[in-house]
Amino acid sequence: MRKFLAVTAVAALALTGCRGTSPDDAASGASAGPIKIMVGGIDKVIYMPAKLTEQLGGFAAEGLDVRLLTEPSGANAENVLIAGDVQGVVGFYDHTIDLQTKGKCITGVVQFADVPGEVEIVAAGQAATLTGPADFKGHKLGVTSPGSSTDFLTQYLATKGGLTSADYTTVKAGAGQTFIAAIDNGGIDAGMTTDPTAAKLLTTGKGKILLDMRTEQGTRAALGGLYPASSLYMDCAWVDGHRAQVQKLANALVKTLRWIKGHSAEEIAAKMPAEYAAGDPKLYAKAVHDSAGMFNGDGLMKEEGARNVLEVLSQFSPNVKGKKDQVDLSKTYTTEFTSKVAG
Image 1 (cartoon, rainbow, N blue to C red):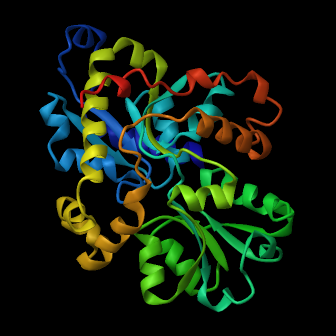
Image 2: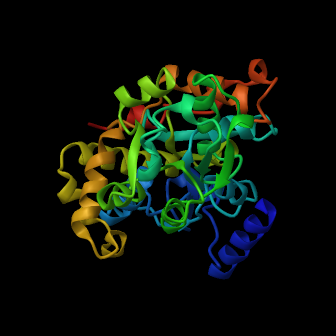
């Protein structure tokens, strides 16, 4: 299935006729061609800095031609990056660790958040008896897709509740309307999702918050520490060959992270495409309000967080199990570019 989706995405990209920036362009600091970035769900608030930067004119101000594309799942987005048809992915940092165990060098260049930005939502009808991870037993739990970051986090939460993945049923629920439909029709009893999906379920009374990982406090309570998630990650070789472009990307994105810290949810929401509000601007502003605090404002990775991600993956990712000591975390992210962004 992943191969099919990757091939489909690559075919779609090929139709655009866009080519990436060459090393010669990079050496001169020019941006002669577009930089294509695949976003693992472009309308998800957790990945908002990418589109917001475009809306604010941040990429253009740096002289960059950035093309934002979208895939509903980060696991699928990474396949397009590996194929070389995009230059970067906005997705969960944990993919850089997973890919290193497969012999790929992928590095996070801008870390948007130190927390997952995810919410474990329980269907209203199940809320009285499903009150924490220890109650997962016998229930159907929604994740974006098997092998996704939400899948690994769900397994980790179950373990902290004294359970294993054999104690519950994992259901591919996606995000947005597919997730909401799964709650509506009883396909899942609870599941992990992000805003604006979470905001829609909460305001309609269809769901209640079980665990809130949109804040540092909530994340530490649920996971025992930081868990950096949304980020821009790129192929190491491309980064090395296009350092001027990467610095400009970092400049644009970090400035947006700072802009978020200085503006209200309503001001932020107003800058986003109108269709993201799906006809309900107030609900979208609430979604932004509830999640915007997750963004770190500086784009820097915290070492503690990177270690925690490795710890979780070493327990639940089939690709990372047994290879924890072989992973070189220093190659999975860099603060070189974000640390140079002028104040």
